[in-house]
Length: 270
Length: 248
Image (cartoon, rainbow over all chains, first blue to last red; front, side):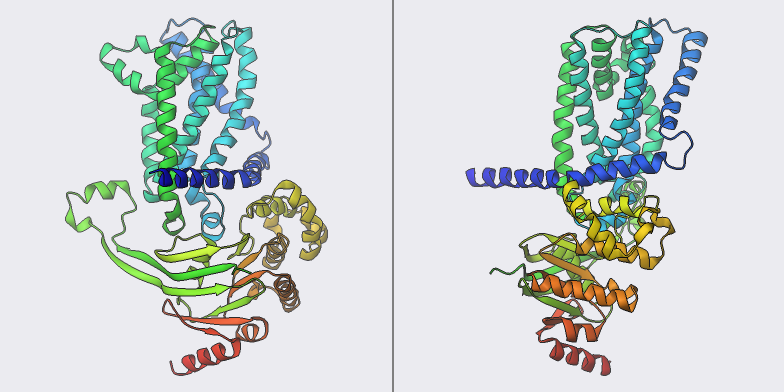
């Protein structure tokens, strides 16, 4: 028993050390994506900011002025959820094909394959950070965001959210190798998940029968915690924090497990 | 000195599937519709391969197409998991199975140096130290700051090989890559390989270039049908291979 525990921890340590040794590869893969994305387009990185901006304007006009949703500070309220959603959904669709998109790398060279889903998340986290950097001052100016010590909860939740996204990406990268229609299924499922997440509404606006679904949706608690810390200047509710922690731990453990279990087969499956 | 590569009874099985179910939709449908169910057959691409490579040795692997040469290299490099037996590697291994792997055509040659070299596990500092040598060896001159999409095949090959030879590995695993370059460049590559070998690098090279095997390799192995028929002095192994081809 002791022996197996010892070898398991040694194996885990070796894997982490190997990943760390390849940190430079992660850096240059992310830089490659950033450069390729911005080169040859006139506005460069601004394009990725145009999309949330236009979506924001559309939703605010329709929800606030057509449907007359009565949420105070609706712009800030919606913007927080929208940015988190865009980060998460873009990572999901990219992660599903990240192994197949890099077939040559997987088949012809040797490196820790988890670098590929990590590249997806880090690349989108860079965009997300820029978008947040622009959005936060706007939210403060609009009177939506509160500057208090509870912003630390915002930072903590964002870190947990990123780890959660990494774990989901590990899962989807694996599934995407074995099922070629995973991307198509995901593209159909994403709009359902968008409306099944309280992004443009609050959980208590939903009818009572649907609320259990919202509660188990991990995005609900992540967005709920961030809104509490950032918009209300309060500590997130213990229920939300509990769900956030549980989802993060479960997904990280299972995501790492599934990737270690099936990763060695990727080269012969792509 | 312990061997750099140690293979014991290595086998690699692939599962050949007819009706391969690549789609989740089909996988679910096959539960109710039996004609969609896939049938599987195991195919052993490699069987019971045992050999060692010492530091300072160049082993040439020859054999007909489809004999399992590339599969063996992939198993040794750690890209494929062996289905049977064990592979043990001592030192930093650099696979050179495809030239210019990791290159992105939109990036310049210089940017691709950093990307491709980091794929071998080098840090920025190590790459910066090797950069000048790589550019000189590649003979690209001012073209190094041009996007590689404008390069010819030969230019990409030269840059790819320059990177691979400048990362100072302990073990090289090479799959018939310098066959593409011109004679002068091939000669230069062989000189580098020879220099690395004398410095203690172990090389495993798969090739169809029999004179190269006879002149450069310290030992040669013949693989036919996934089995290593013989491993020994290059001249004998090449002679056996020629005999085998003549009787085909």
